[in-house]
Image (cartoon, rainbow, N blue to C red):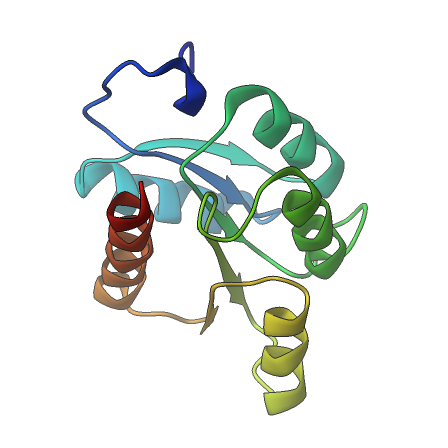
Length: 138
């Protein structure tokens, strides 16, 4: 993940950080997003994910809410301290599917909220849509 967004250099593939503590699901999401043409890095805990986001400036984050070291809500708040929503979209991908969970996700800074299990096509199209919003604002 050598270059960053602010370098001004052109990149051909958007970089996505997937924050998911279930290894099998993280690999599955990574594989589908890579097949869609994205460069993907995974992290299984919130604190390392925040550090990666601060250092490597991903173009989008796919974020689980139930992480071993902190909640995804807390991770999202920290990401919002680093980046504005139009700079770094956050897509929450979680098993929490109650309306209150979704409202909490948006109130903590999520740009999109998907519940598990999610269709691959829905995940990939949501990522593409979020990234297109960022491109239009650049």
